[in-house]
Image (cartoon, rainbow, N blue to C red; front, side, top):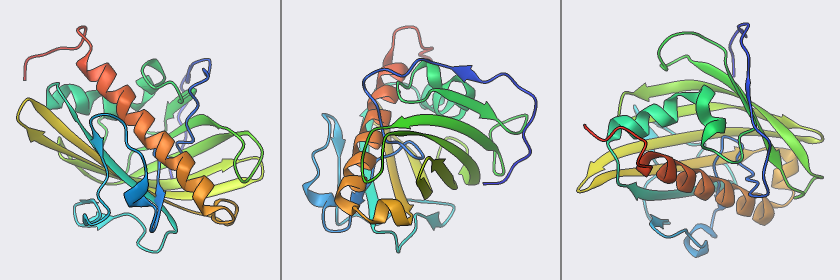
Amino acid sequence: MSGTPTTRTSTTRTPNTRLRAALFTVPLVAIGVLGTAAAPAGATTSPAARSLTCRGEGVNPHALIRYRTETVIHAPLRTIWRLQTDVERWPSWQDAVTTTERLDHGPFRKGSAFRWTTPVPPNPTPATSLEITSTVEQLKRHSCIRWTGPAVGEGLRIDGVHVWNFTRVRGGVRVSTEETHTGAEVEADVPTATKLLRQGLEAWLRDLKTAAEAPTQSRPR
């Protein structure tokens, strides 16, 4: 991703044991494995569903590592959108995000960039911490986001594409997410890389649901 760093203080958080291999903070399922992956309560996977898009653009169609999942969050759309796009506050509600830094100013929009870190447990490579630089490529307010960029750690580089869709449904909002990963290190062990991506995306949705449904959040639409 591109972006010129600004002088800001990053938010930090001590990692806990619920580590996620969220590269764009998101889990993936390898082609042919998606339909058998276990989803958390309230989340679903659909191997037959078309890939998610935002303004006509989706994930990498050639990636071997991919995962899609969704859940219904019983909270106002504006609350969910605020939590998701206020990236500098991610460490306050996401267990796996240790630091975040916006690389631009103003509203979260197309072209916005941010740098963040997350720990990754041993997989095809040793345990490491990933530094991810994400750039928003497409965005439609209260509807969808698509960002891309590299995740780099010791002995590991992953190029990811992550798409989010937000749809009002009875009683709340259906949040759907899909991500793909490419890179020599993760492609050396697709099942393990896919498992870690799945764990990351599902944990992200659980954390987002918990944060959005908390009594402290504003309720009016």
